[in-house]
Each structure stands twice: as C-alpha cells, then as structure tokens.
Image (cartoon, rainbow, N blue to C red; front, side, top):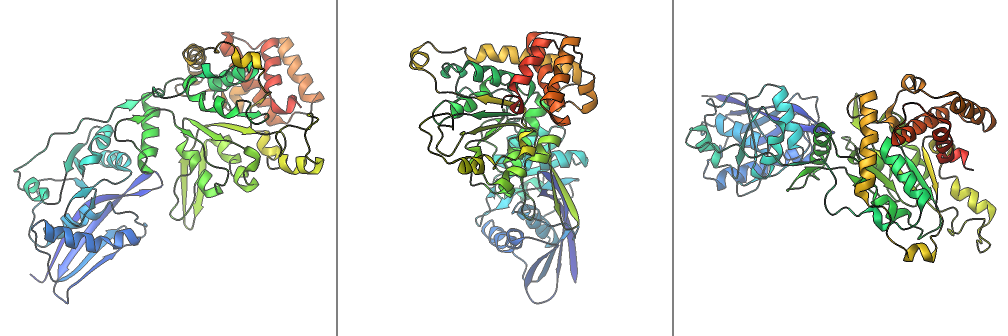
Length: 501
C-alpha cells in the first residue's frame, strides 16, 4: 500500500479549558522523515523524538518511511507534551502494529518517556470533562492522573503505565479497573492556623468576620508587626466550606496549572504573591494565555502583603476582575475568559517607615508619604469594601488569653452565608449582588436617612453607595436581621475606607 492514514483523538489545554484535537498520521513512501504540523509549540514538535524512542524501547518497529502527523484544527495552537500518546497510537495503527477498532470514541492523553513510560500531564480533569461533553466512551490517561480524571464521571477511564500496554488493550487481553475518584476537600485542611492566635485587635477580628461572611475585600493598614499578615493567614479558617461544584472548579484550575496535589483536591485556595509580581503574573497573560494568581485564588483568598510596594500598573490590573469576577485576555483573533471570584485581602503600612505621620518618631517627608500611598489609586481603593486600621497590641493583650477560636466564628459566618444563598441563590454572597439586587435591600427609615446623609455630606461615589449597602446587608445577616437598621448601616459606614479618613 502506497499510503496509510490513521487517526486518534486527544485534547490540548486552552487557558483552563480543553479543546479537542484530531491527530491524523499519514505513512507513505519516501525518504524517512517525521513531521508534525498544525501549529505545534516546541514541546509538541519534540514529540517526534520521544515517540520514536518510546516505540523502539517498547518492542515496536518504527517505520522508516515518510511520516506526517497533522493536528487538526490547524488554526488552533497546540501546547504541551500531552499529545505524545495519541501520536504514538495513531502511528502504530498506520504502520499496522496496532488495531484500536475495538475501542470506539477513545481519547488518549499523556507524555511519553524515552523508555515508553506514560508520564502525568496537567489539565486532565478539564480534558476528561471535555471528553464527557463530546460523548466519548473512554479516555486513556497516565496512571498518576487516573484519580483526577475519574472526578469527571460518566466517562470511562483507563490508566496506562507504559506504551506497551496499548497492544494488550487493543487486543482485548487486558482491561484495568476504573480508578477511584480523588477525594474533594470542601473545607480548609487541618493545618490551617487558627484565629485564636490573634490576640487583642477586636476591630480587626470584627472586620475579618464581616469580610468572610459577605465575601468582601479587605484592606488592613497599620505599623509593621501589628498582626496584619497573621490575621490574613487565618482568614481561610473562618470561611465556610465549598459546595461540591465550587470544589470541582478549584480543582479544575489547579489541575490546568499543574498544581493539583496527589492526595486530595479542592479546599479554598490562599495565594500570596510577592510584590515583584508582574501584571501578567497577577491576572494572567502570555502567549498562549495562562492563568495568573487571581485565577489560582478563585473561590479563595488573594493576599497582597505590603500593598504599596506593588507596581501601580500591577494593582490597576485588578480593577476589572474585582468588579466582574472574570479576567479577559485578548490575543490576535481570540479571547480568553478566566474565572477569578476571589476575596482580595491587602496589608499596607501607613508610610514608608511604617510608623505613620501621627507618630512623633516618623521621619518620612510629606511628599514621600503621598508618593507611597499613591500606589493605591482612588479607583481601586473605591472597590475595596472594608478598611481595618491596625494599632500595635498592648503588652496586656499579648500576655492575655487567646481570642475566640476559628470554629465559633466559622459557625456565624456559615449561618450568614446560608441567609445570603436563600436570598440570592446557591453559591452567591452579598459581595456579588447586582445593582438591581442592591436596590432591593430592605432598610428602615433611620438607616436610609443615615446613608443619604453620608452620600451627600461625605461625597461618596455611586459605587461606594452600593458597596455600603452590600456591607450593611452582611452586618444584618450576621445579626440575623431581616432589614438593615441604623446600627448595621453605621457599622458599614465605619468599615468603609473612604468614610474613616
């Protein structure tokens, strides 16, 4: 036969989603050569050498003919080594060494080692879900990725250790058991530090509870060593458990970024990038686009320590994600939308020396203080819901008893979230309320009068007006009140940054 064509199905990652790729391998007469076409990146082009060595070392014959592997659609950029297994399988079929006709609607994903071992690849959870949506019967994955792929459900999962097992699988001589799905963790792990370690700081503890109850963003300002970083690291311990669907979202993102642990998946993420991070590293970017810290913090906490040390353009990149919960990345001819519904928690010093202008020992010039504080623009500050002004705890507070434990605070937070979900829908919090939903918040006349006075006298923006209402609704949910009263409105106004200056 002059020419033989064989096909196999695989997937490539596009952001955090999986796109279907059809591998077409043609073997025909001519000078021996192996070409991979269809917009492959360097990792895909190098599959030629991995496939060649893996076939020979597993006892197969590598055809000394003209071989062309086309990755369709040709207009889609393919990245990563996850298509090695599909290319090898199609080449084995085209060369007459394998018959996969007994396994219809089969997708193959995996990287090949030179000895034929099938290595784990990132994004297998998204790939398995894409295979399920395309009504594929079975997906073949590396054995390390088996529990992850089983999370998708409703699609068969076959785990391979090496390329040689494909021959027994095609002949029907071997069929492994379906792997057990990786356990999904809904709440914070046992190693998360407890809020009881935060001594004193009554105002900060209240701000943390309100932020956790409503999913609000929080800015802590105070001198170094007052407990800002300690408080932020304990915020996950008071957040309510994830819903199973939310835990699957978190696991999907972690899988696509190669950060999914081998033991269990899920749990609210806590991301704390260094202040030298670039805008692309914070919100995502590159070519092809990849997720940033904001997407990795989806359904969790994004902590920015030393906020005023971040580059201003890096901080400004957060403005749209804070409003919409999505990162939009535009590239030539395409758009990528990455989810990033996170709680922004930031910590900053009041001035470069950290003492604050009110302290007699502060030696910072007024111009230096203004330049330092200008890293946080007014537009971004208006999008931050709460401000907690931190002071140094006294010696008596440090030597006193521990504060309230995380478990007790988490119960109140979970009860407040249940009230919000019954009102707004499953998985939603007060921080996600739309403008129309904000206008429907029930509040009594004294609360409405107090808000109207603050809006006119303190010159709140329209955005700040709505954020005060969201904040007051959360305070009312913590108190179990049906309508927002004057006391809840006063607390919300006190917690707003612009209203505490």
